[in-house]
Image (cartoon, rainbow, N blue to C red; front, side, top):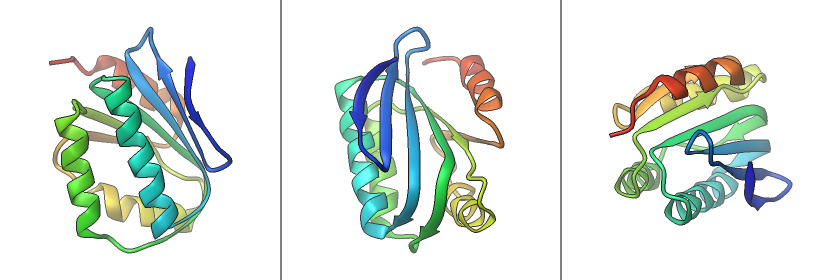
Length: 131
């Protein structure tokens, strides 16, 4: 996997054999940190065009933010950049998991799968056909 971005709170790698981005979110997220991570994901998707992203949220410790219109616009921009499938591994922390689920479940496009482990997300994402 080729490193695209790496910081204490966010790792993004390009998985060339699978033709997707791997995102590892780490630590506690508030609105400003989440927005910065989302902006970096969009920049990475534009730099490494692909239709799939595997987001690993198991290292998220807490989520403290509200749903915003900014998030909806970001998701539209991600789709415009080519995103079709989002595999999301839910956090282990119950508070962070609940907050993440509240933000993910209303999404209808792109296609989002939620998982308890990376292996299941990986398999699901491999099965999704690129368009």
